[in-house]
Image 1: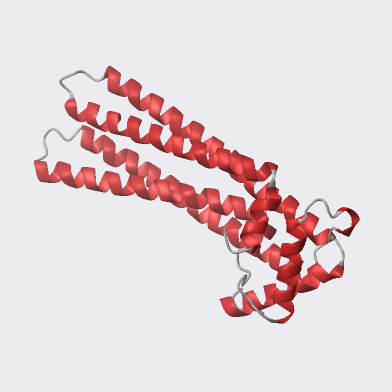
Image 2 (image 1 turned 45 degrees about the vertical axis):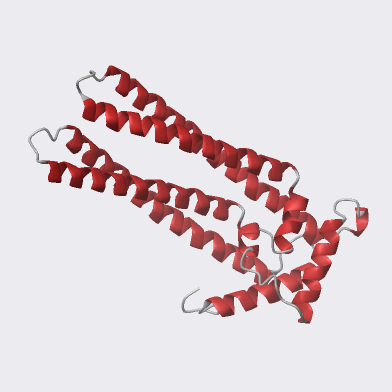
Length: 245
C-alpha cells in the first residue's frame, strides 16, 4: 500500500501477522478493524489487477486473431515472413492464455480475499505470539468440526472463506473449460471444411483444435480438484497452515 502504513511487503506482512493474532484471540466472527482494512485493500488490489489483465487479454486476443488471419492469407509472402507470422501468432496466443489465467486468479483472490491474504502469512514462524497462534489454528483444524462449541469463531470464518475460495475456482475453471471446448469444436469444424489441398489452414485449425481440447481437459482436472476442496475445506486448510499449499 504505497504511501501509507504498508509501504513495503515486510511492513505489510508484519501488520497482517499482528492483525491475524488479534482476530484469532478476539473470539469474534467479525474481522477486527485492522484485519478488515487489510482485506479491503487486498480486494482493491486484485480488482485493479484483474481489470488490467482483462484489458490485456482483449488486446492479445484481437492481435492474435489478426496475426493468424494474416498467416492464412500469406500466399504471396516468403518463407521467412510466414515463419515470423507463425512465431508472433504463437507468442501472442501464449500471452493471451497466460493473461486469462491471471484474470481468473485475481477474480478468485478478490472474491475470497481473506483466504488469498492468508497466503502472505509467515507460516514458518517458530516463536512469539504469532507462532503460538499458528499452533492453535493447526490444533483446531485437526479436530474441526468435532470441537463443537469450543471451535473458535475465527476458524469457522476461515474454513467457510477457504471453501468459497475454491468454489470460485470451480466456477471460473468450468467457464474456461467450456470456452476451450467450444474453441476446439469450432477449430475442428474449420479443419474439416478446409480442402485437402489447403494444408496451411488445416495445420492451423488442427493445431488449435488439439491444443484447445487438451487444455480443456487439464482445466477440468483443476475444476474437479477444487470441487473436492470446496466440499471439505478443513483438511486442505490444515495442509496450508502446515506449509503444504
